[in-house]
Image (tube, rainbow, N blue to C red; front, side, top):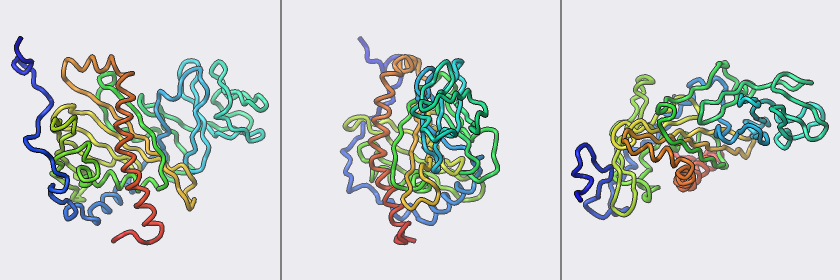
Length: 338
């Protein structure tokens, strides 16, 4: 039987490195990773409008007929649940009657019922409880908090373009760190650290293009990198990093295996903006896609693949949260370089 690589139209996404990779021998990137360049990209990202929308979590974490989902955003308790038809509801997580935590209440026939005294909330204004605008983009759920964001509100959040609905496999990973959203975004706007800080995942990383600050269309990092699979086996791709709004950085594969796949990193401040010990949730959505015919099997195996995808993201973020927390610790004490 002939090898699959001989079959017409089939090529393997894997490449074999012709040498063993030596971490210490790779070209240093510290000169190219100019602090001013990263700071300027962060400043431009911070100035973009968000419409006061914040990512709360994964869409599939808020299910019909199950207990409500609670999250604190900017020091504000938020509760989310679904109606019987699946429509998303959101509002303050503190019961207006005597302050019960509504995230611990129950949903009965699509109505949130407070477990202290039975106040029933159907998603509309009730007894001083006012709903928050909410949006489900199919992968993530967003809530609009105008008092926290302080910007001009918009009807919808800035949702990055993704592979066509139903064509990919998505997974959402969440972690929490002692830092502010800008520290998470700054981490993602520094692609030069990839093969130094994550050698178990990235090899031969080269930044082929960096922002020139000449407009939003030019504000992109272009990166050539090989994702390590096992041993010397890698998958080389070209990817672009952009920041469409202040708390989001998107990596999109533009060439190579998985073209159009995206990794969205969303940073949501959990504590009040003036809290001296801020905590930020990193909500990372991975939407993998491929034009290979066999990718239909991956979509069918999505429930099995999602835990593996979350585990991969978790390994990277164990390191990157150290990076973000270190940056915040230095900034907050006036010791950050530059």
